Length: 446
Image (cartoon, rainbow, N blue to C red; front, side, top):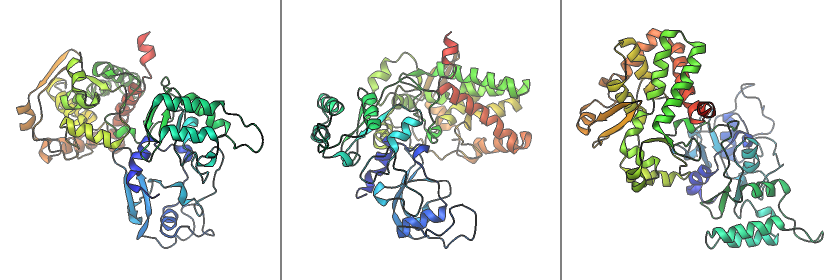
């Protein structure tokens, strides 16, 4: 609670999952953060009775979680909106919001459920080894030794040795300090040989390496993440595009007339072509210029990506890619030049579906000033895509009103209707999700 500046980095390493969330009316959350507690006698059901006076002033600091790159620290009640995910220190307690759930919790307050909730959501086991989370068992000798091994330096061998000593610990008698609970030790055992991430407030996080788990709870904010990895290996642009097209064809066969299936499949295939931008390729390779130079073909997904927003920003800045660059807008331009059919109606739909697959271009694209775009060269589906820097710079950027993005959206809305166009967009987005999660990978390899 005394270091709000580290909250975004901290929560980015341990993103919220549904099992640790508590739903509460907006007015109650604002009042609780402003006064420390809401009135107990007020109704718990949102939308019933007369809503109490709204609190719009200063509140205790909290983090509004909107993904790794868009979350922010807020100190004003008005900055919390309906539907927001609000993360607070466990030291705030939750009196006035609901009943505390104390099973499988860590920390002195016994309120933090992240480890157990993450595991229950089907994600690889992960455990925070920090002084705050281990506070209830701080008198246990191997816990003290573990924290001592972590604090001076991140020596993997020393930490592993301390973890093994903790797992082997048994109380000699009733007076001996208790060890952490069995459910927690089980997670430590499963995560012990995994990745070691440095915690911003001291300590580390152990994250198990495990095969992809298609039943895992999805990250509700990952769709806006250009850098989301699909698995523990790089995925080429050709492979991801092919999988997305196949998924789109399978879906479209079941819910679209024949004349629209081609547009959906074509949009799915070209949706990530904008990742051919060499700066984006550099980001996907963690800023490793040698790896980029040695690469035989472009990739669409990294083997893994930094969870730290600061690290991600540093890689992006070093690459020269503008902060608001959207790869789907370049994908749209490449599709326009190299892929769309002569049928104007079909071309409109393909270009819109490509531009909108992350939710933008409905009707406006994010403003992105890119004064020095590089040449784009690559191949996709056997088509050579070459777009030089002069042509990129001279073309109207997608955010400009004369780019055609907004006008295309309204033409298609008039043609297919509000819900009809959204339905078509959803099919492309679903195809991308299926491809990213390798839902069809096993079948395509057989």
